[in-house]
Length: 263
Ligand SMILES: O=P(O)(O)OC[C@H]1O[C@H](O[C@H]2O[C@H](CO)[C@@H](O)[C@H](O)[C@H]2O)[C@H](O)[C@@H](O)[C@@H]1O
Image 1 (spheres, rainbow, N blue to C red):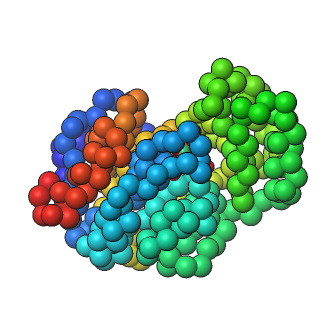
Image 2: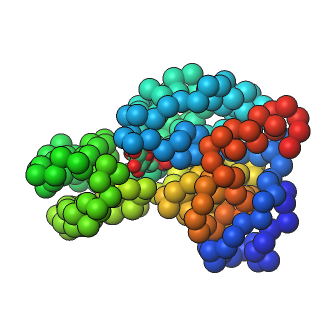
Image 3: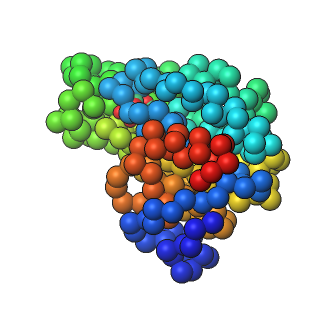
């Protein structure tokens, strides 16, 4: 493990910092957690336009074998969506910001049950911005996302529409994302997802390493570090993570080096 910049490993949310370039060892007692958009795949113009890099699925399968199954995907996307992109990944997945969990790579549990007519929420979101075709409304099984990537000047429109929806749905909370705002069930979050995964085999008792690129990953990286592990920020921007890699290609290169036995 690299020398932590934060001198107090008990501090759960260390201040924002520029992480050291060193990267953790991935040893037999590591549990590896990987975000999807902006981490395993480059950000694309639309959620359905991501491109799976050559070799990604094979890399994940080999890591899963190397770490005796202790590799999980942790995403804001729902599990069915992730499986459609990576159908051969055999490991655990936390989806919908932790509202869904599949420990065995098959059955999906809902971790947070709230009173929500999700179809009505999707309709309300679509109606709210019906006069703005550049805004993409992404219906999700446990919430909704609104994207302004096609026209960043529409950010205030999206923020206002989503704030309005949040006030009409008290069980839901706003989640800022990259060129998007989401509504997710209150009480969910990637830190909680990490905690649940770390309580179960084959993750329990291991040291977590978490790689992610977005605001939604910060709490999970802080949580991994509070457990004695390491966060790896993918890309630019403030972060609590102690380590950084430039982009998904750099992460892939590092993971390939780990698999090849070098670092
Ligand atoms: O937790 P993640 O795996 O990083 O997922 C977070 C959200 O990612 C997706 O949106 C983001 O990626 C899109 C494709 O690159 C991009 O077009 C969009 O602007 C980004 O916000 C996804 O659509 C969301 O559902 C995820 O929650």
